[in-house]
Length: 553
Image (tube, rainbow, N blue to C red):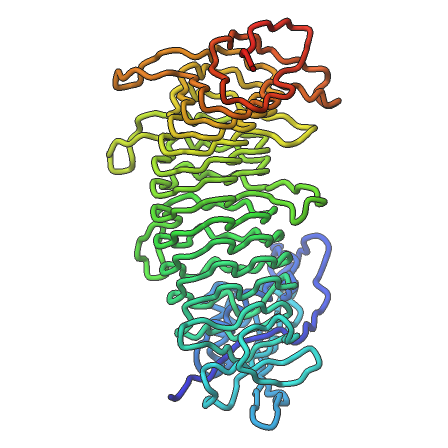
């Protein structure tokens, strides 16, 4: 089958001249009227824009005339402002393959007496493989020693490739991956590729040329694509993600990434777990909104209605137990996300210490796991009470319905010995009837003192550390008969299945707590603790006398 020649551009070198510096210069014309000429900028500042123009051509090579017009069309400068020269370079070749190279020199014509914007020069090089009969699964690349090579291997972890001239792929739509040292690729992504899983995993580079204008409309899998690419921060805002279903761990450990992706179409995405985990700098708008594509067709960006898993999506997790926890920057509006199909929000904002956005309308009807959800999210203090609200179509639903949640362990806790949680919101009407673990749920939530007297704890087996260091809490949580919203009677704070109450009301007395004491002194004598086998250090012996503890065996 005949294949199109593959064109892409790489930066070969920069020839820069010194920009004119200093104050605004005044030039007098014949009528002695001053003409203001602002200082000119060096053309190196628009290197990426010129590169994008070169990358946008999908067949053949640019002519000088085409480039001149493209510069004007893109509003980079007016006619005559940038001079373009074209020259052929020595090809790169081996015994079977030749890569032809064309050098384009862009020279800014800006001077103090004209209205052109730029001065200086820059050189960019495009490369075209002359042999278009190579098999689909063959990748052509140049290694760190300058050798032109070809391979049918898909794993590039140990190949030391620097530049890719042709991307190989398999019949199942998968392609090469783990391009750790690759700095440049073809500007055209083969349309047969449907999976970019692990493509740039563990990349060592900040910028990767050729990828900004890729047509990714056929891609279905972008999971782990930039996982571990700690320096990567390239513009990928134009990517068409309308057919992508998997974005899990896409930017996990991409600790430098902070690019605008607010127009991405995520309508078909089902997996977003760990998507921005350890992407410490990421703090961009990813709210749901109506936008238009390049053909002015309207679509919904960041539609999350099909996502089922958001576990650890914005979390910070140390790579080893010895590592310090780094804080996440993310604090953007996600109030209008449709979370109606999400089943796991485990650790979603764990260690997202800056996050404090309104998410009071979130539909959590299907969520089963909220453990660690806001753990160490020190700033978070928003309304997440259960309530009736209406969606964009006027349909009523229940926000923060927790009726299917089974695990709330460490949900609002801090595991830090130096910082305490801010949270102190009404959660009195949460349905906790299916929760089995409340371990450390409010640990270190020092301000929390809300009414939770009607919580159904009949299935809870673990309450260890639940109110440890929750210094302000002093509410009635005795066992009692109450009625639900439908008038049905049940027993609140039924502890008959609890087995572990270790340090439930303990005060760790860390120096950073400045001598804070526990406030709790409610009557818990009617708690059923027959199954409790662990209750070591149930409470701290403080200056507040508490003689109404549970009657442990």
